[in-house]
Image 1 (cartoon, rainbow, N blue to C red):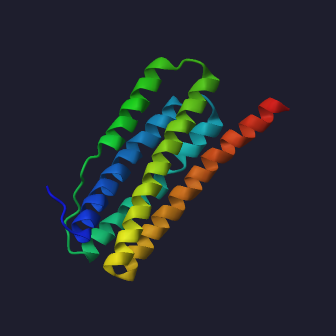
Image 2: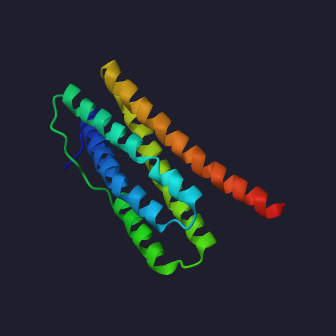
Length: 163
């Protein structure tokens, strides 16, 4: 499909975000299962409700734009899922596994934030209705909180190791 307008780009990116969020439900469950520590399991286990809310907001955007919710895959997301599958097979050490789980989670949140930033910019430029923009902004804020929580875990780990 050839993209010739900002609206077509917005629609494609919204479909990519929708696909990513649906994949994230399984990704976070898999990361929680792969984690070695209860602390890391809690980071991912507690995010499922937020992801469901984010999917609901995306579906509300589709409805507001009179579009059927549709997913479009992304090679980036597929690569992240493949990376997760590979590390589960390769990493046996508990500390390394927790580090890898957190790093994959951070890559995911950064991808999500990037998609959301692009969508927010396009929504503003297209003059889309306020519920659309606020739903995107709320999803972005939640993704940022999740990323911050993972970064805090890494910082606390680094400080704990240097003590």
